[in-house]
Image (cartoon, rainbow, N blue to C red; front, side, top):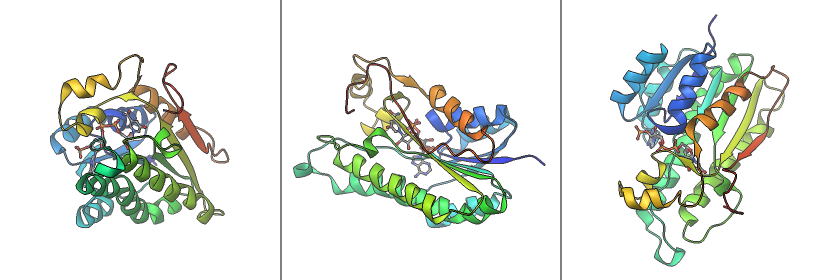
Length: 237
Ligand code: NJP
């Protein structure tokens, strides 16, 4: 029977490219996000299922995960950043958005789908964290702290699921040209474009192909952590 994948945040960027890649590998893909119009177009193209999903909303997550009949692969991709500010000038609403979306969003979806991933007999959880999960950056404490917490949630599951037929892979990207920076700067295209100055950024497809590679390894192979950056992106960022 057809293996199924769930991709959160599949209405743009890495999630959308990943959904296409997994569909190409023969998965039936459930795509979730808030912008349902985009998801429906994508699902029609890849022969998948579009479902509304707001990972910050308990009821929305429940309706989404209840509608997923079977789950062999979960890609925790929904996430993002808001603003840039020193700790001294931190915006509490931006912090709340980032923690709700990246941390609690990943927790809600993962918790709900865990029984189905175990029942699969060969489950895989891929969580898209960030190089921000390994470093502290000036002006970036809200996002880096949320990505650290999301990564710790994922890494904790590795130990807790030992003995269960579920693999766990963390993918930590550097700069990828998506709508990420537009979201961070509330649609300000000049500020968003400035982020990629001086580097040739990754594109969403680069990450999608890595997810596809991970998903196509045999059941006994667990790729643990994959850090992927543009060649010219400076250390540590
Ligand atoms: O960004 P973007 P990416 N409920 O903005 C969805 C990480 N990352 O592909 O709801 C459900 O194109 C949103 O959908 P919608 C990053 O932290 C990136 O780059 O319709 N979904 C959209 O589909 C994130 O975890 C870079 O607005 C929600 C998707 O999330 C992942 O990569 C660097 C949602 C975001 O797509 C994908 O981001 C890095 C909600 N409440 C890590 N809120 C980078 N691009 O440079 C948002 O280190 N979404």
